[in-house]
Image: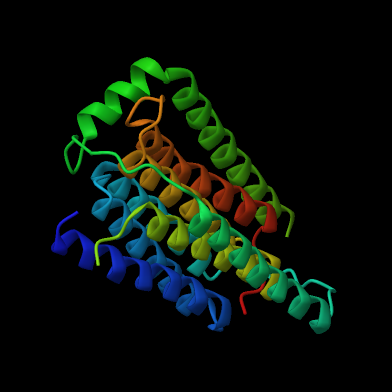
Amino acid sequence: MDSLHAIGFYVSAAISVGGGLALAFLPGRGSRGVALAAAGLGIAGLYLSLSAGFAGLVALVCYAGCALLLAAPHYRVIETAVGAVWRQVAAVAAAGLFAVLAYAAWRGDFFHALYVSGDIGSASIGRLLFTHDALATEAVGALVLAALAGATVMWRGRGRGR
Amino acid sequence: MSPDLVAVLFVAAALVATGVFVAAWKRDLTAALASLPLIFGGAGVAFAGVSRFAATGAPPLFGQEVATLLPVVALALVALGVGIAGRGTPR
């Protein structure tokens, strides 16, 4: 990996994790949407620096969609009844999860291989998606269709019932 | 310092843990849906990193393929969650 990719990797990592943390602490829908969009931008940059440019493009579009959905002004706020103490315990558990995963990555004795493919690779990914793993692609397509249809039906049903 | 697979897995672990933290920290369940793209993003970064650095018996682009599909799944789940939450009083 050359120095440009390395700089891109570390900057993207900082943007994605920083956006995620901002998502946790920022109040308001608009700021949460911006934070999620920033996290998505960072994740897309990570993909690009890992020579997965097509995945980065898809991630950029999908995370922009997620940010728009979560920044929209018309959805109901559902408050949990969990107390502050349990939320703090869960936050410490998340930190513990990071420690365990980071330790597993650090102790892993990985073999380093030479990468020979291109930076974007959309043609190779497309061939893999639509020939070798067509069933998985169709399953994801069916999931997206079912999710969007379900979301539309519930959204319209609630609007009509009011 | 050039990043290697360990650095990629570090970042992936940080993203997954951040997503879990968002899910645990947010009082509003609909806002906590934002943790899903983070967790899926962390998993996707790990897949792309393994595809980029590791030598396995799987096809070399398999990790990138999964990393391509995961954001789509995350978007679908967020759309479904927001749809289930439904319209209500904005805050």
